[in-house]
Amino acid sequence: MIRKQNLNKNWSDLGSVLIDSLPENLQKDQKEWLGYQWNLVVGKEISGISFVDKIAQGTVHIRVQGAEWLPALESLKQNFILELNSRAGKQLVSKIKLIT
Image (cartoon, rainbow, N blue to C red; front, side, top):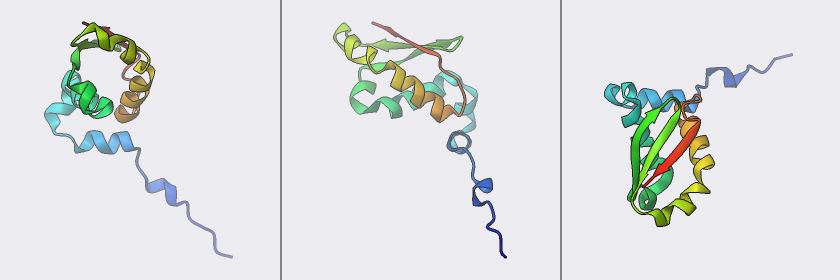
C-alpha cells in the first residue's frame, strides 16, 4: 500500500512570503509598511482621503480628510484590522483610531 505524502508541509504562510518580497527598507519601518498595506487594503478611493499618521502600541492612527468619511470608515475598522494582521502574518494592529 502506498501512503499519500503530506503535500501541505512545504507551503508557507502568505504573510511571510509577502513580507519577504518587499524591499528591506519597507520591512524595517512599520509605518511605511503599514502605509503601503493600508493603500492596498482600503482601495483607491479611501486611500485618496486617508493615510497612516503613526502607530503606537498596536494602535494605528489614520488621518482622514473630512469628517464626512468617519461614519463609513468606523463601520469598516474591524475588517481593516483583520486584513492588515493577515498581511503581516501576526497580530500587529489591535486598534485603528481615525483622526480628522
